[in-house]
Image 1 (cartoon, helix red, strand yellow):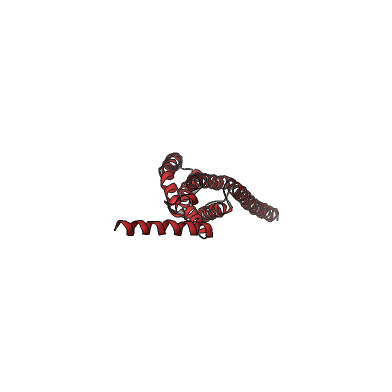
Image 2: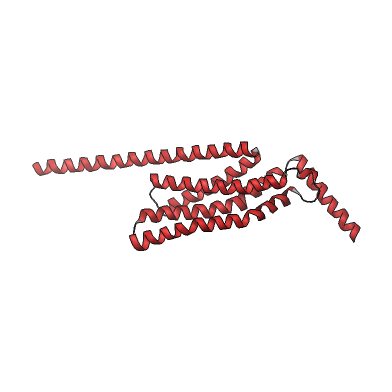
Length: 219
């Protein structure tokens, strides 16, 4: 009888511990989603006031792209979504937004007053900005990935710590996708939105018409 009482007590304690872990995991998930939402909102407001609304929309779409891919990696490999993982995802968001701001700043610099110039279209000026910041983005990405690669090697080969490996893996993928989204997603989306405006469309048509006239005259 005493043995049965002890077994019941053990089962009860095990069940309580499992429920506590489940509650803790739900709190971590809610905290993580809240932190991601607040961080994304603040970054969107910064982009909105620092540049223009169209820039903000492009930046947020690129940010969502990075977050979805990062969470997809977590789900695909069944990684534990802990507070450390939340910090890793927030780091990825910060890196991605920083890279996007650098590219957008150059786009804004190149396109300021472009309507008074008849040499390049808006898309060409934006493409020039991407080319001018490309090497910086690549160098920053490589430098950021080197210590993370070393962390993966140390965690897996030397220490055998899976937590460090998971954090480094998430950051490696997040930084890589953040660089790609800044160049191949956020900026092209910005150009697509901008070129729908009547004034910019009119300017681009004037640039192309002038080119055709110059080609006809030289032929």
